[in-house]
Image 1 (cartoon, rainbow, N blue to C red):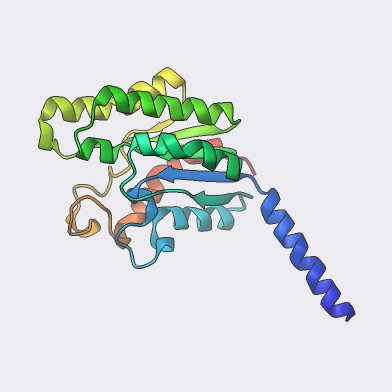
Image 2 (image 1 turned 90 degrees about the horizontal axis):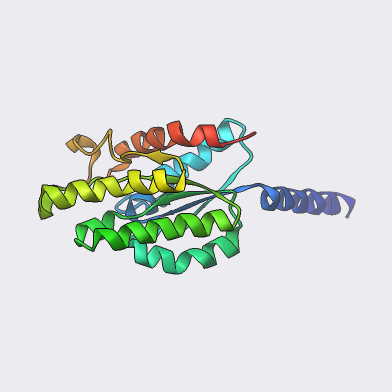
Length: 204
């Protein structure tokens, strides 16, 4: 009986310690949701969780990414996610689906800015992940799309990863057949790209 009680106490202590750990909320689309992978933990977010643990950072990672999400959809569901998880840091990875659908650049910029503001008001820091899109809609739209991430990061004074897929987009062996999503072999490259900007924001 005493042994059972000890196990129960230790289990509850572990749950409490996990609950007290600061949260990193990954708020993105299919690039962060593990689209096309056999298991979601094969994605860069799952790898981030393991890297934080192995390097002694006391964070828990919540992946609130949704495949197909636009910045408008993200803005609508962000308040609930912030209320549920009370993150210390939010990795914001949205915009690709706006670009693939040729949605208005001005609205995308406003949505991203509003999400940054909402996150800061909730007491969390933001890391903004930038994206490039194929030139399907012409060079002017493509370049304006890419510049939005820099403009928002500058206006809101938040750190930015210029291009999440920088080390995989032009490597067919690291991309899925659709040419848009990194495969399992490409995920460590995504993690490395994010980690270089994320690490300075972390504390042990």
